[in-house]
Amino acid sequence: MGGVVGDKLNYTLGAFYLNSSGEDDSWAATAPILGQSLGAGSPIPTGLNVENGLEENKSYAGYGQASYRVLPDLNFTAGVRYTKERKDLTSYNHSNWVPSTPSMVS
Image (tube, one colour):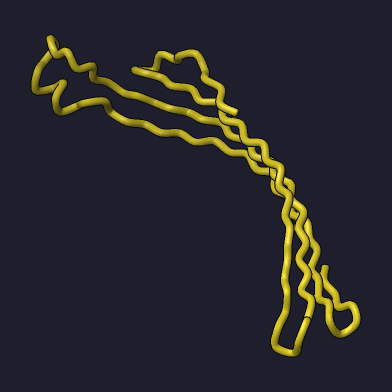
């Protein structure tokens, strides 16, 4: 929303909202070349590593800006913005298909 007050003051006001969620999967073979070349007695663990993550994001914001014309070629402009966010991630790590305890990040 925006407007003009008289012929000297212009302003803009607004709000923003975001709500998102998703899932991320990542697969990787751990040290396949080194483990294969050193054989069964390798000190380097080899296998499949799988990471699954669930994420949720929420964000709210409000903002405003105003410009005041002091002279025909001179304006003073000021603005503010307030944002509040919450981000959550639950991550599951698996090695060779054996699930581990989930880790929580906020």
